[in-house]
Length: 362
Image (tube, rainbow, N blue to C red; front, side, top):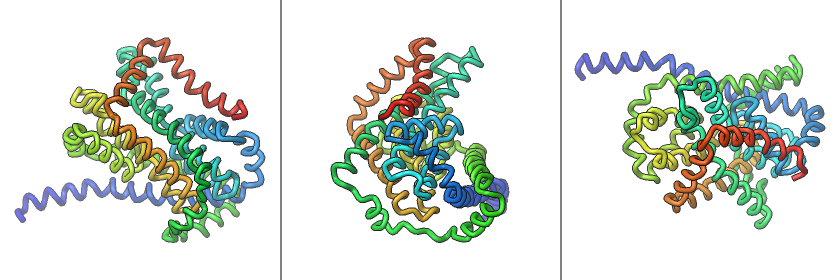
């Protein structure tokens, strides 16, 4: 190998080491935060139970609570992770966990629309379409997939009497690789108290996901953009790319961030992006599945897997009628951004709807 080629490779390797180190820190922090959150939630069960029994009383309220909670922490994945730990502590049922995870997906997609609207109000040089752009597209895609998936999952489990405990046992979900965190998490919870441990675990979980975003934001994505431009011409290739990239990096902010420059510069049309966003929307559940594994919760894992399977079925059906689906999304998109007044009403509905789900006995 020529010396100059070797030197360039070594230089690239040295330049990537800080990013790799941060990625390792983010993974370890995430795994520890999940274990600590699990230990603290178990210790806090007597205090949390009355609150959950008051506000999470049915499918609608479960969806509404996790939907609004996702706004509060600006991250649907964190809310889904907390939901799994609540189930692991026997504070919510299998059915409630299913709807909590579904609600976190709906709320997570709503965040990007709200932030786009705020950006539009603060920077008048942007048009409403420019400010909301990909965020609104993600919202429409996510809701048109997860709302039918929610119905499919609820009806399917009831109709076929699916035993999620049996499914979890059949899968043999049990991961002990991270068991050394358990005694540490338990001791910390005992020492500082369950409330402090819960808050610390929650903040660590948020910090680990923010760190993931920071790590991948610094990655040179030009090669991925090049591949994206080639693959977005095929709906199945675009779907697979969005799914794999998001599942691997557990960050939809990264996977969508890759295609934003291509979209903004007119290299790809909005219609071509829809299959990619469909894949990314499905792949974002990978970190919630990981939480079920880390907590060694077979039923929790199986319940989240049910969300993945039902959303996957709806996604595949949508891809089979892709042209009609794209036309439907286009109509919804154009209507929402047709005027500032229409967009304002739409954003208001993003808060009013989950509130009504909590307040009404659904």
